[in-house]
Image (spheres, rainbow, N blue to C red):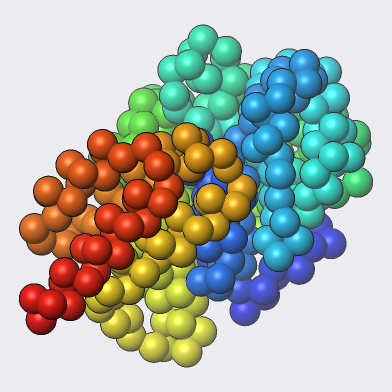
Length: 328
């Protein structure tokens, strides 16, 4: 199944969420090889973009094999949002620009009054969306949450305002800001939003299997589902969802060998796009995620966190694989 976000055709129903410190070019490209319909680059600060922050511009790097790709921006000042969106469009050439109105992290939502804090000001939401839509030539989407807390569930109101202001699609993380990433996502909120707007709605929250993906689509009527933490160390989840939704193919157990080979592939890709120190630091987290569920890996994990060189890390994983073969 395909659908359109503005004039951008999305082939499929699996969208990969923007995750801070994770959704860089390497991670996104791996997700695309698994069949992701759309990848969203990790959020960047509007202020950092307008100030010309070097590290932020590094985050804006992308490759054509990632298309269609969306770049997410967060902020709270309308003029800064507009300027940042123009810069992102000019320098990165994304297919879509996404406005973050869902981040629950205190540094963003409380200190900067950005992300999910904007849900408390519906009028400002409309002003920001309208201004950004008028400033760029690509479709603009918005990612929101159910509301600020249980006493202020306003996703439907916000979604309607976004649509009226020119947004081409909306993603709903079915938790409140107060919930953060805990508790259960209320998919009924996604259903209510879908029934209230005519633009595409992407559902987000608690997709941990291909069965969850199908259930969310059926229960809410949403156009696509967004996977975030579920694919950390498990990019195969994307492929499983695609195969199950499109061909009703049941998922197969991912082998230990496949996981170890993916670690080496991920490291190789990261090595080509980051300096050694950053690549090793990033891979430490990813390897921990990849090894989740594999028994007797505590010693391996301990060794990984002592290594600072890429070649040493590669050798450690290869030696572990060879030792595993010998045991068999």
